[in-house]
Image (cartoon, rainbow, N blue to C red; front, top):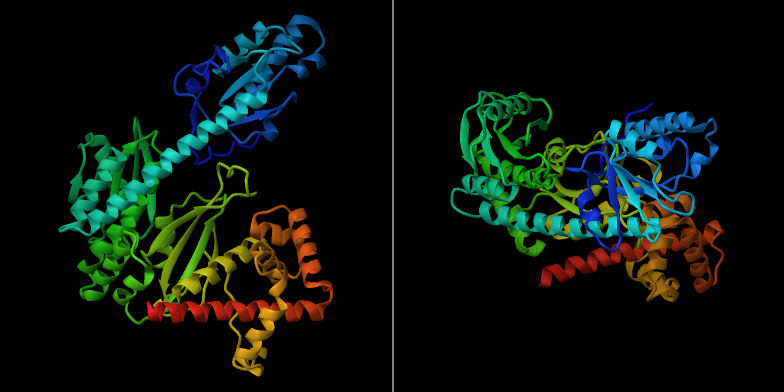
Length: 524
């Protein structure tokens, strides 16, 4: 049997919270009572639901599958013991048994089996539909997620403000310790402490954290984690100090039941990479880049921070973590060779539906043009062309489009195509091209969804499935939008000449919007 997948990254719902809701009327009959976390709900009447479990579920059943058991009480007892054992092996967090319409009570053999296998067993009363339990879990997840995002936002602002204070490294360590409710330190591979904050942990925890600092400081992974009773340990290589005896690592010892602490520590690692960088790379450049990042994190407009970044060219990278990796954003930053990285919004599979609990988190990064950007294991990347600071907003849109294309085509990295000097655009006067494009696409004015869908559909050669993947919508929605677009444009979108003309028009307006943005930026 394959091992269950790791629990999702969304906040869990304590089983005790569900039991406390009087509107549900749930009652626990067997199994452990403390520390049970529910990530989602799954209903199944199969004798073996394991192939359909991801781990962390409350599995709901009305016991319909018991009807297939023959041979009397001994056979039922053996069947229920195997059912409980399989449910535990599949990673389910708890089992909910519904009363009525099949059973009037929970079978005592199931209660005994769940006690033997330490599987929490909850009785769902006849008046509580399974959908009410599922709804309650998702409500609790949403509320917990809101609290978590609020906490992350507050921590990010606090860390950015700390980085702008005198002695910024010490200030960031203190802010980080406060927001992860633990101990933070800057360590060298030999265990020397270059600053610490928060309650001092035990000698065993300090020794374990020191070993993690050795791992990341010796040219190994950019981050490493470990656990000790009651503590989650992590270390992050600070890219500004390189490797070897002088390498610095951020060490964190936080509560083992506090997943957001890892994300908060990743933000601090990026800031500390900037702050400690000048120790081996003297000069004003690193300091001004740090100031630019801090200003952006504190809410400044990009054009206000642009003078601090200088005249160099930058590429924008949009990245989305795949399901086969747990590497934090700070690790991607180290691999790309830049500390200028920012968490982005989560991507839901279907608009209006809750995001999948283990959905990958997208991040954005600024990478100096001289650094080579290559595919990264566990990540899907969309990369813009190198541009000056004034054109970064347009490059951000191009990188986002490249990421959508990479996800749709299952490519590890996609860069937008740059037209050459002898392309078709060079044969048409810019003003004539804009006038033609605006007239051709005028029927789509006021319908941005149709225009965006058309743009992606054409870029993906008319593939319904890939366009649906790129936009995060159902393929039938793509078909409906394209049909509506064809009707508004009064044209045949199966005609390759029509597709070519529409693509030329869309690309012309893309370039036009980028030019307008540069003009507006220069006049602000």
